[in-house]
Image (cartoon, rainbow, N blue to C red; front, side, top):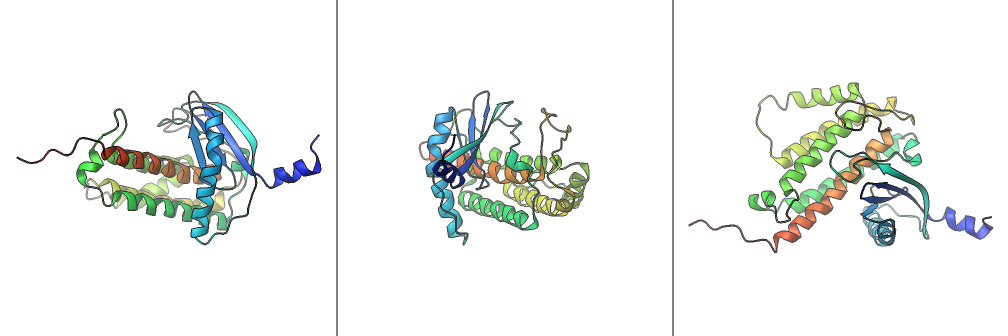
Length: 263
């Protein structure tokens, strides 16, 4: 039986949702959208949480968002057997915390997190040469350009999870922009997809309560459950994860063979 002190500690702890697939583990901090760790064991992701949470709280404070001090971590949900977790096209868990209705104020906070992610991403890639964008210094891993296109593709897919009406609204926004049939650069496409996504998500909020839903189109996992809150969470988490992978590619470029010189 929990003592009064134990209950108090739990109330002041960070709530952690765990998910596990064939290989990867993820630990998500429910109170900090987009704050998560990834690893190959439960111990690895839990051990990494204090450092990641400290960094996230410092970041939010720098944005003028004071954070409530919490002590320790409380695992509130473990979901196992997620097909393809951590791989492109894989499923992700629906947590109990994803079932809360999204308020207008929370939508604004999610949009802020998306914007801050994008600002960080652009700060990282803007100084890079064309060669650095297409180089593959890590065998078997995407180039930065491929990763940027993947982020844009994923955001279009997250919009499609909201249902056909929301997807049609998004596509209508982009239709005129694609009339020139010019191939957009990766940064251009990121910007256009995000603009359309934000408009579509803003329009969708009055229609989406806490109910879960499925969208069988464009997925290998038609039984995967979604909510509006989960869609917003994935926008933030997915880009943040790939900011990390892009940073690793940039680090590897320092040790990669230099660009061939013109003769």
